[in-house]
Image (cartoon, rainbow, N blue to C red):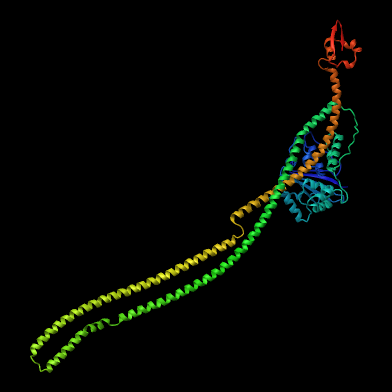
Length: 584
């Protein structure tokens, strides 16, 4: 027979390991406040009851009380309809209770291990799952309360409505209590009602109402009332209870307004997202076009750069040829100058200078020859005369020769200076031309390198500019934020819708109760008004006059007086002895 066989607590509110066997008749005994009811509350949790609903309001939450640490476990061992022994483990990660089915009976060694000191410590939920999977034991993923209840009870509508329906349906075929064809929906409410200490009939009524509410069943309306007249005080209590619920109803209306505002904001964000997406798509297309244009420009610039490089290389080659030619010419000039310096120019120049002297000697010898041939007449006088003439000639020729020597030396100095100046100017022109060509080459090379670097940088950064990239990052961050807000809003929307649906059902029930109560209150109020009209008449009425001035009028005058006259205010009253006469 399927059912719960035992409950095992490891490191919970009770220290150590506590085992409670439930395979037969179980009796839990103990003194007051010893934890009997605390253990008993764990039974509805196994059948799928929310843990927060079994803990009384005077105590901490289920997690802080039963599962205070990560090493705390609550294990339920149960028998399925097919006779298989399985277990379900409850733990907490600080954000809620987690469930995990395990396809094997409970074994304490699976949960404990010994450290180096020989002390026993419990594993965490993840370590337990890894160890069992290594031994080929089927272990489910972590489930929440709703998924766990649907799997255990084989609640197929809830399983198919879940996002992981295929996985949960497979778990239900293996771990459900009812087998594959049956289901045990709402068994957790029956278990809670059975184990509750409250009035049995009221608990069962609340259980049936909760089941009908979860199934979406609306009870048929009936105008017939079992009791036509109820106590006025009870109706007042009902009205007060509704007044106590009014703040919650107002909060629900505020939540509904906030939900509508959130939906409007999400619609606006969606429109902005679509607009931004279209704008970015257009920008991407434009940027791709610009990228293609830049690539074409780069190819054109590469071709121009190649042509410029070839032209500069040709110019450089021509400059190098001119430099080589000028260097050869300069070397030839230096060689000729060296050859000219190597020749005996001084000897030749001395011979040129001695040429007039040699001519003079020739003339002297010729004259002597004439003198000798003319028979040497008057030789001594002719000789002296000739000697004086020769001396004068010699002095004149020496002066002439000295002037020529000075002129030639001056010309020689000028020529050497001119030659040196020409050599310096040629060398300076060569160095300047070479430096100018080198500077032009370096400048053109640097400009081409800079242009190439700019082109490469522009090609690398052709996607987006810095401003566009920052705007794109901002848009992406806005889209991510809007997506996260949309997901949070969708989750809040689903929660708010479920809460709104429940609140609307509760409001309908309360509205019906309020209408019935209002009708009854109006009926009772009309009766009260009639009674109060008799008990507390208005001012200047006949009844007020009789009560104030004629005590005991009921026994005499009241026997003959019409009842409709007691509330009239237009009568004139006169007192005559013990009798008051009234005339209208």
